[in-house]
Length: 74
Ligand SMILES: [Zn+2]
Image 1 (spheres, rainbow, N blue to C red):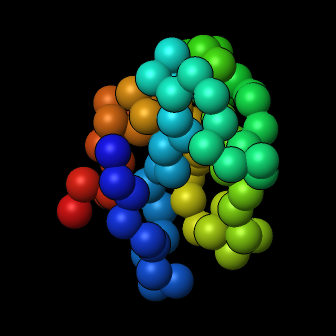
Image 2 (cartoon, rainbow, N blue to C red):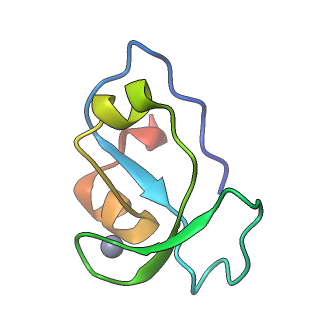
Image 3 (tube, rainbow, N blue to C red):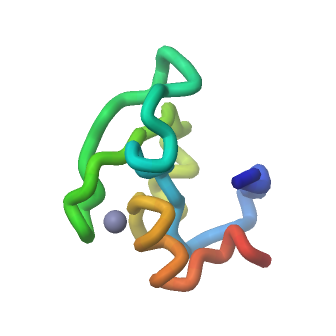
């Protein structure tokens, strides 16, 4: 899955974290194993800038983001 870079004007929606079941090994040293706040499954949190973190409604796993209607699809 390729995530489009978000623009600063984008607000709302959910950021998707890769699920560990889909991505067993981190792609980068900055990835941190965490759990999805919605479903509790293990996923990878990637380093995010503060403005991006504050601009979204939540940071959840890819499946929860899709279920919630992620605006990454636009
Ligand atoms: Zn989830």
